[in-house]
Length: 538
View 1 (cartoon, rainbow, N blue to C red):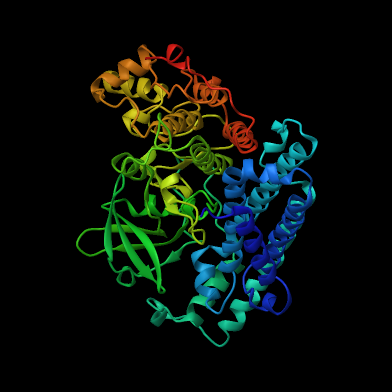
View 2 (spheres, rainbow, N blue to C red):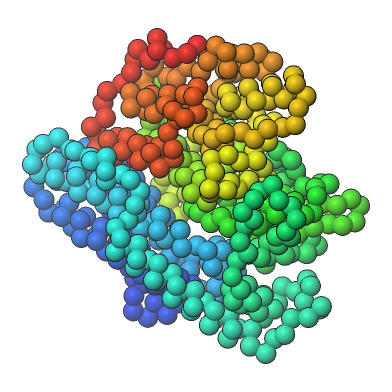
């Protein structure tokens, strides 16, 4: 018997509200006030669910929307519940280090918006059922922004939660003074003392000029971990420039990426960029280390994910778990996956960081925790951007950056990056800066969308030596599935436009993807572009 996802959502909401009230509230050691903000949003959702049970016409509504909206609501409230659970318990110091509590306010902003938006879609569907009218989703309601009041409440809550964390840390570290013997300590008093010192000092500002290497920028927000405390558990794979291993630290599982032979100063500068990033759709970097014997090696310690998106899609193809006749996933989870990737990129760009090597291998995924009823193979998963060894910040006062042209993977590389690289190769001149580096990420994102829709790498079967001519001169683009919704086709086309100035920005992309997702959840997106194959570049 198929699970009733609206019932499961009610149970998850009830548990979340119980954990943030009464005696249970005392066990919230981290982010208590932000957790209560999430609980307030969930309480509003519970009231709407009561209306679903009592409203006339709700039986027909439940029958039609259970498989889509019910699943989505259950997914969102489960994410909210897990975020609250992560902030509870006696092992709060480990959790604070793991989730980067000093910077995790974006997690609460995102989940509050997700709960609010999904609840609004539920209301739209309920009104449609009661009034027997077509559901109407307003694009302006999909802009990803909370109200000024909600944002203010969360910011105030985050400030107080940070002050509470300082108090807990000072209490735990009372009487401890760090000295040379603490170099490898995993003693909680020592960790609390170090954490307290980190919170008391302001984060180091990023250098205004990326090209400047004169200033030493230390990773002030990242934990310095002795490499002997990071055992190799199993090899996960190779990234662009280093080996990735599963490891453990403080009894928690992490991934570590080892960079051999890198310049220590450059590594510390890039580590400081990583230290500034904390978002639900960006892989969380926790610490760093170095090995000075047997050749210099630098190590980044980050959260452990399950696999990369390319492997996930390949496994679906091998298992013949097709979501539709045209691709590995059904359209709703496919659009949600695109939205997760876009949200991560929107956040990076808002922090003036360009990814510069976006492809499916650099999007990591893992199954949803706490929601076994939602199938991983159907695309119900968390996606996060990874591999920022090449990310660089951009001076906010100019539209140019120091992006090196010979960066990225050819199949996903924007035309302007290829053209500049060809010019450099032929003229043997100093590498120039590239205009609009963030627009190159937009182009690569469109190619990742193609992979999500088809399960294939872009330009599969084409020789790499022929790709530059195909993409830059002939302006070829991969062929999207014929049953792709017209709005989605249009969005992807605008993202891989040959002229970078004509491409969308990620706030616009996220808004449009969320609008498409809303249309799918309400059952109002029924138009498809069967004739698209005649429109695409091939």
